[in-house]
Image (cartoon, rainbow, N blue to C red; front, side, top):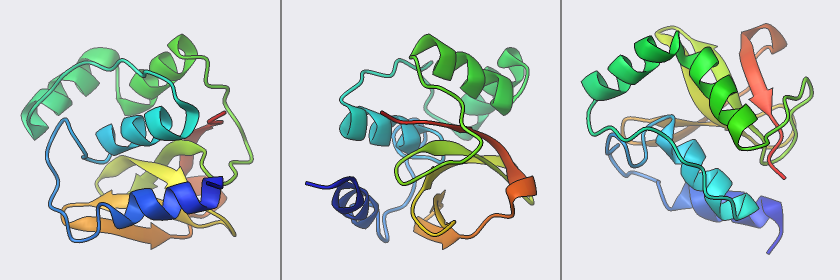
Length: 132
């Protein structure tokens, strides 16, 4: 199956599905994607609520610091030009959110009840990492 087909299938699996914190929220769903796409076991701190997630983020010095640390530990190289299947953080109105990059400058964003697609301006990409 091509990377494009993998991503389409993955996104479709979350269509109209409410978020479960620690399982498929905006950060956890990226971990699941990396596990599926790159066949890597990405170990992350466990959490089961927004409050738990926020405590981990604050303890790490912010979401960008947490993601960078996890990327380094798992051998994901930073990229300034994300391509299909790469992952990253994009600045949203509420702060950074985990995304999976698609094609043509589009990224997939986990929402409370599914997945949305957006075309972030390059200035809103907080960080991006290559998924092998």
